Length: 326
Ligand SMILES: Nc1ncnc2c1ncn2[C@@H]1O[C@H](COP(=O)(O)OP(=O)(O)OP(=O)(O)O)[C@@H](O)[C@H]1O
Ligand SMILES: N[C@@H](CCO)C(=O)O
Image 1 (cartoon, rainbow, N blue to C red):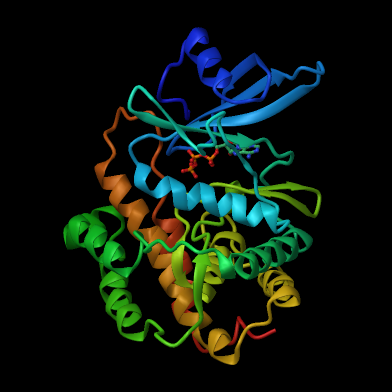
Image 2: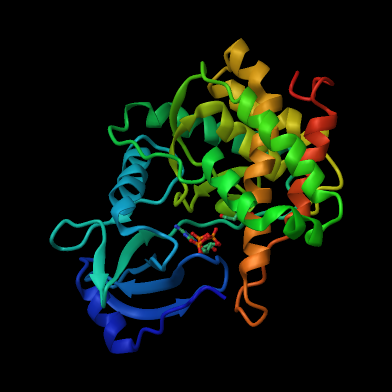
């Protein structure tokens, strides 16, 4: 379920008429995604050609003041041949519009599907695409603070509380209370920073075979430690879904793909073990908070924090075993 707002056909036709994309043929709500409402839009242009777009309506989780950063970043990366969708500007040149108080953007439709059991070839391609984004974003002029950084995890996990974490799993509070201060005190301050995606999970990558056709959902993109983005992607791609099995061949391929485009500095490589623990903590924190704060009758099913607690435990156990050495 990810259509939170009902748009009648007249509303939809009016919205699409604000863009120079032809006339509306169909609009279908997209089930995937949890944050925003998305529709697959088909239009017919003046030559009779069919065209496809994604219409996104930003719901409460996305701050409208961040949209110029997110949408400007897509245009910047697309102009540098990164596999990201362009934004379609309206007839007045704006990258987003307001409809009854909510922001809307029309985005290029990209082909491809999200993989659920990646192969090494796919992990390699994703690593390369991530490095391409990091290089291409180097001269993006805007910056955005990471709203999901260490301070946010501390607040979210603090709000869950010791007993709350124990109610999720008897060992979870102990793990968090051991790891969180350790991550805070070892967070590297000397590494290259830049624009990062910060949420490059398989469901945010469209692929055709081994080719990355689209990196999407840049709504956590921000300015932070570049290598942290590799750690996030590593945590998201290199385990089975519930985090019980690390997949070394995916890990090796992801790093190899990344370094074929942007070789890591020795200090970035050295920081990967702690950054991986941080990445696992980030998703553990938001998932634990959401699990404890989502009403039972909510339309979305909360994701399992333990899938990332297991990754965190794995990274903590593996800290000195060189899993990031290729
Ligand atoms: N540019 C695009 N081209 C093709 N399909 C897209 C595009 N953007 C989004 N989609 C489709 O829409 C779905 C939802 O998009 P997205 O992940 O951005 O939603 P969201 O609710 O913002 O995300 P999340 O659940 O990660 O918070 C994707 O899974 C994908 O199927
Ligand atoms: N990728 C996040 C959801 C927020 O985008 C998760 O799996 O917890």
